[in-house]
Length: 444
Image (cartoon, one colour):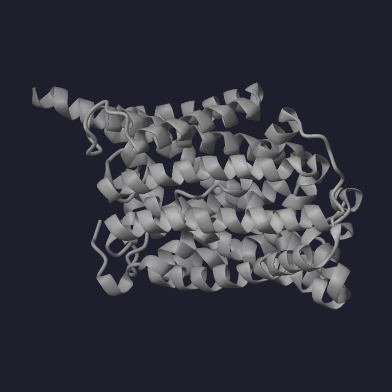
């Protein structure tokens, strides 16, 4: 892989925007409605999820500082457990990235249709608009890491504007108004409700590891990647907790549970329909920005694998801009096929289930990286005095326990299907390793 000159690399702010932008997608605008049945339990669920996500962010930040190489999860798993586990970790993550992008693209167009009504009322228009957005962000990523980073910075700033406004409005009301402003139903606290809300909120924080995958495109990666990972996760988690809590507290639970635009309902209560309708624009920008960042990830990871010799070499081919052009075209092509399949009525339930399975594959990747950190910390590779009880060892343990807990909460069916999605990568690994084995036997 050719080294990029510093003027074509991503700096700290672009790296931070990649993390925040990949975490904060279009789903946040619907999340309060999903959390409504759990009332105040959802706030505790947010705190648990944020604690687990921050522990994972610390793990990724520490690993990326010591191993500032492109590939992130693949590198850490391979160093700790060998080539096969490293490959399978990357395989599951890669499949999860481009399949998850299908849901992200569909959600983005759903918000766009609120601004451009003909999309909803014209046969085939939603599919066409979705595919068009996919290939627009593919082109931006093909143009270079800095071009992708600039777009990511702009969309990240814009997507945070309405969330910050809602947080400010909520804090002002809670400090100046009386208790009648709180409309949340006083649901009794229960572990089952807290667990359920924690599972829902986990979906919103996937992507905290994004910067580690792109370390090869980052200027001064041993500093910027860990800082962006940690601060990006803290920023996204803080905004999520505050914004969603405002909606849960201020909008009646019955209304919130059936709302298609929970944050718009908050704004409508105080500023009317005109301003509330503009939220669809910010939701569309949010989804577009997240799709831009995840398109970068879905092409960068197979390039790392191809350069390591465990993935077809075509994925390592570079454009004149230093971007993996073949990888972008292939993964966006797969994504386009999946989106078109999703627009057939018989595929809707299957597609929804696939998204759940993809989330489970991310959880397994997080668990593998947390356990890898534990192993490397235990044997002294991470700079600790071997087997000494250190703060990082405790944090990595919490990250591993949290990952196991969330996998358990996802259900057995999703877990076993995630195992199948990882196992599908085994033939690819064996096929790519076969020429090496043949060459070795021939030389001996």
